[in-house]
Image (cartoon, rainbow, N blue to C red):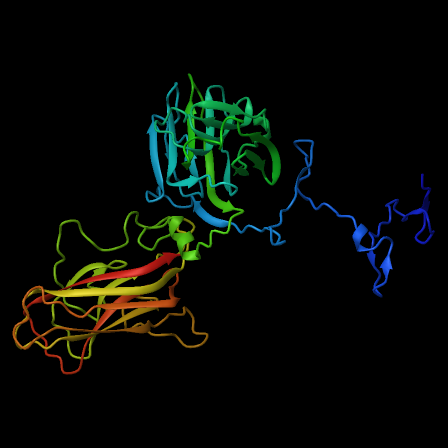
Length: 496
C-alpha cells in the first residue's frame, strides 16, 4: 500500500497538499509534449455532476450529471417562456383567467396580489378558484418549471381549510380536482400531490404550516418531469415524487391549465386570506426555437388583448353587428379609438391636411397597470366605398402610421433639450396611397388599394404614448360632402 506523504515531489508515493487533498495528475503529455505516466491511453475519466440543492431540507444533496450528444456536444436546454402574470391590477384579467366560486370569493384589491377569501367560506363545498385558459403539456424529456409566489395573508389556516396551486382543472369552486400536480397547504403542513386518472400519490410533509409566516410571500416551484416531480421553496428542494411505474407521465391528461384554489372541507370559522402575487411557467431542456413574439403571444401578450389594468377584452374597435357611423377627420382628435378595427370617414378632409382615422394610447404605467412596450411589426389596411361618392370627388389618401406622441393631436410639439415636462411629436412612417375611381360617381363597394407593410425591426410605442393611422388628402384631390368610406385596420403587434 502506498504511503501518503505531505509534499509535492516525492517519487513513487501518493503526495498530498497542505489541505490533505490528494494531488492527482492523470496520464497524458507534459507541457513540452513528452508522454508522462502511461500516456493518454491510460488517462482516466472524471465524472461531472452539478449540485442543484445542498440537501438542507431533504438531508441529501441533489446532484445531476450533464449529457453529451452522439456528436460529443454537451446537451444544453434554453428555457422558453410559456406564461407570465402579475396580479397588480384591480380587476381580473379575463383574457388569461377563468374564475369560479361558491360562497367563498376572490378579488384583486390593487395591492399587488389576488386574494382568496375576500368573503370567507364557512362550510364544506365553499370555495373559489382561478384557472388559466392556457394549457401546459408534458413533452418527453422536457421539464415544465412553474413558479408561484404566494403566502398566508392575515391569519393562519384553520381546520377544514385547504389551499392548492399547480396544474389541474377544477370545475367547481369548492371541489378539488382529481387530475394533475400541485402543492397542497393545510393545517397538517405543505405537501406535493399528483393525481393520475383519479389515483392519488403524495409526498411526506414538505414543510409545516408554522413555517409559513403570516404576511410573507414565498416562492414555491414545481418542476414537472416525465418521470418525477420536484417541489421547491425559496430555492431549496423540499422533496420529490416519482411517477408510478405503471404511468408514463404525471397525469393522464396530456396537458392541463394552471390553477389556484382555496376551499373548505367542513365547517370553518376563520378570516384567513391566501395571496398570490405572480406566476410564471417555462419549458426547459428542449430547443423549441420559438421566437420571442410567439412566446409573448402564447403567454397572453398579443396586442389584440387588454393587459393587466387595461380595459379587458379586445383592443380593436369592432362593434358586433354594427356598422360604424362615418365621421369627419381632424388633425387634433381621433375619429375612432382602438388598436385597429373598423372605421368610416366622411370624404371632407381638405387637400394636404392630415386627419386622424384611428388612434390608441398605450396605457400609462401605474402601480396597478404594468407598463409594457407595444411592439408593432406591421400594418394592414383595406377600404371600400360604403356610401356613394359624388362624380366630382377626386380622392387619393396618403396613409401613414404616426406614433410616439404624448398627446393625441398631430400638432403635439417636441420639447427642446432640458425643457421641463418633455413632450414628443409624432414619429411618422409613410405606408402608401389609397385611391378610388372617380371618373363617375364611385358606387358602394368600390375598393381602394390595399396597404400591407411589415418591418423586421418593430416600431415601439411606450407606455403613455399614442399610435395612429393618419390619412392625408393628396394634392389635386377634390373633396365632397357626399358619401363615406369604410376602413379596416389591422396591426401585427405584441406587448412586451
